[in-house]
Amino acid sequence: MHGAEWGSPHGDTSSALWHAGLVAVPLDLLLPFLVASVLVTVIPGADMALVTRQVLVGGAAQAQKTIFGNLAGLLVHGVALAAGLSALIVASATAYTVVKLAGAAYLLYLGVQTLLTSKRPQAGPPPVSAAAPRRAFLQGLISTVLNPKPAIFFLTFLPQFVDRDSAVLPQTLTLTAVHVVIGLVWLSAYARLVHRARGVLTAPRVKAWIERTTGVVLIAFGLRVAVERR
Image 1 (tube, rainbow, N blue to C red):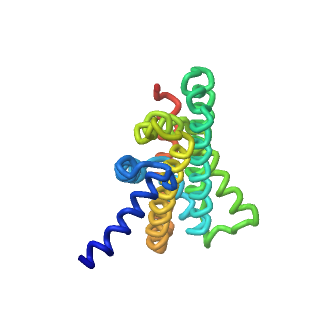
Image 2: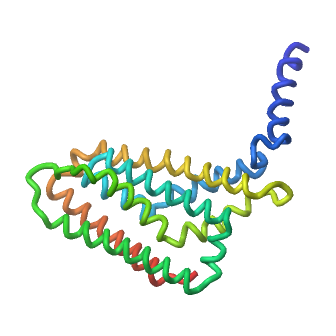
Image 3: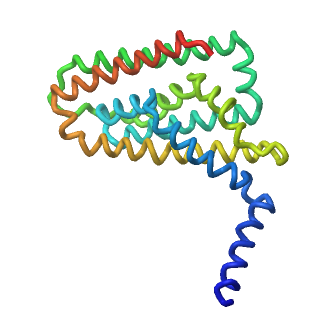
């Protein structure tokens, strides 16, 4: 009897939070979204290739700035979806093509830059300028904002987990925030793993090989974005 008295108010309180709307997304939609978002996030992509590059070039701190830039780009796409801009971009062939080619060009630029860096001999760690953190953040931000794939992801994937009988805007923003947090945890953990192996990875021959591979991967993603149809 005592256990029932203890457990019942707790369950009622948890249920009341959802029914009162203090938690924007219904639990039966939020939990599947968490699982799906994790699976989508851990799939290797341009963001992980860019983080790998940043760890090798500037260390974990610089990679973290790029991660923050990536996540800020996801927030831009999430807010754009909430405002209806993503639908406009996807619906307009011209707008979609412009954004797609701009994003592809930027990934190609980063890939070529990485390949060129791999050919330069370095006796020690590269110097870090005062502008490096800002540049690292912008690289993550621009590469994500100019990639139309997140816009399509948010437009086609996220609405499946929105309760249309409730306010859509708070649910959209909540799901976006959840996806961003998952991305923060995953990319930060990935950057730390790469950083821990940096002693081996930054050996001249190994570092050059990884930079060439990363450069080729970034170029491949750029070409894929450029030629891929919706």
